[in-house]
Amino acid sequence: MGRHSWGVLVWAGAAVVRLVLVALPGHPVDVGAFHAWAARLAEVGPRAFYAPGVFVDYLPGYLLVLWPLGLLVRSFPFLAPEVLKLPPAVADFAVAYWLRRLGGPRGGLAAAAYLWNPAVLLAGPWWGQAESVAVAWLVGSAWAWHQARHGWAGLLFALGALTKPQYAAAGVVLLLGLAQGWPGVRVVAGTAGSFLATVVGCGFLFGLWPWDLVRLALGAAATYPYGSVNALNLWYLLGWNWKPDPTGALGLPAGVWGTMLALAAVAWAGARVAGRGEVGLAALGAAAASASVFAFATRMHERYLFPAVPFVLLAWSWKRARSWLWAAASGVLLCNLVYGFAYLANFPEYATPLWKAVWAGFRWPLPQAVCVLSVGLAVACLGFVGAAGKRGGATPVPWGRPRGS
Image 1 (tube, helix red, strand yellow):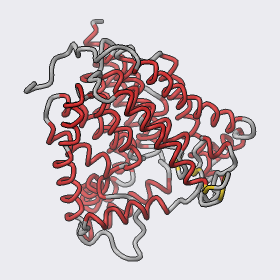
Image 2 (cartoon, rainbow, N blue to C red):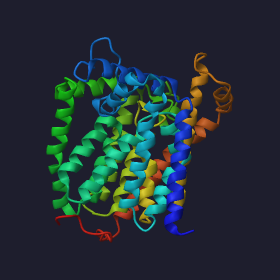
Image 3 (tube, rainbow, N blue to C red):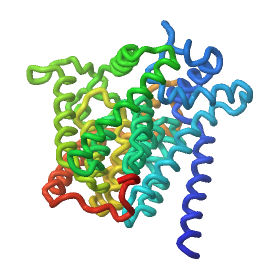
Image 4 (cartoon, one colour):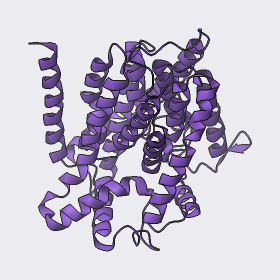
C-alpha cells in the first residue's frame, strides 16, 4: 500500500471514528446550551439574540456556526443534539489540513497525530465543545498571513478571537513569529484593519456595538470568577479550584497574580519569536503562550490547554520540538478533559456509572500530579522558546516565499 493510500485510510478512519463519537451523548451542559442558543437564533435571528434575561456567555463567533444549525434543527428536529456536535468534528479536519500545509518534513505525520489524538477526539466529537473551531480559524489565519493575504489573515483571526478569546494571545504570538524581520512585524499590525472590520461587522449583525462586545467579553469572564474551573493548573494546586479569585494571595488578589504571570509568559514568548519568520519557532512560541495562559492564569476551564497540542505538533513537524513534548501536552490535556467530564458525577441528573467510576479515581495525589505537569509543560515550552530564540536568524521556509513577496 502506497503512502497516498495510507493517508486516505488515516483520514477516512478518523472521519468514521468522529461519526461514532458524535452519536454518543456529549457534555449535557455545554451541548444543552448550544442547542438552546441554536434554537433561539432560528427563532429570533441574530439581531435580537442577545437580550436581558437570556444567559449567553459566548461572543458572536461560534454563534455564527450555530445559527444555520438551528435553522436545520427547526426543520428536522430529529437531528438534535448530534448535529450540534458536528462543527468541532469537521473543524478537526481543517486543523489537520493546515498542519499539513504549514508543517515541515513531518507535516503529514503531525496532521495524522492530531486527527487520532485521544484528547482531540474527546474535546470535540465526544464532548461537543468548540475548541477546534477556534484553532482552525487561528491556524488558517497564519496560513493566510504567510501567503501575504493579510486581509484574510485579519478576518480569520477575528473569527477565532470571537469564538474563543482565551486563545487570541497564542494566535498573536504565532503571527509575530511568522513575520520576517521587524518590517514584517509592522505588517502584522497592519492586519488590524480587516480584524476590526470583521469584529465590528459581526457585532452589528448581532445588534452589538464594539463596546457591547467588550462588555460581553468581560461579563463572560466574570461568569466563573474562580481561581480554577476544574483546570488542573497552578491555581488548582494551590487550592483555588472553585474558590473566588478576588481572594488575596501575598498581598494581591489571585486574579491579579494570574494575569501578571500569564502576560509575562506570553510577552516572553512573543519577544523571542517575533520577526524570525520561522514556522516551527512561531508554533513553539504559540504553544508556550497557550500552555502558560492555561497554567498560570485564573478562571481557566479544563479545556483551555487545547491549542497547545496542534501548535506543538506544528513545531514538531519542523523539528523544533521533541516527540515527548507533544505527547506530554496531549496527556495533560486528556487528563484535564477526563477530570472535567467526570466532574458530572457530582450532579445526580448528569451522573452515569462510567463517570462515577472515573471520578472515584481522581483522588489525591492524581489531580495534583497533573497540576505539576501542567506547570512543567508551560515552563518547558518557555525554556525551549528561549533556547531557540538565541540561535541565528530566520530559517528560510522551504515550501516557498509568501505570495507577492
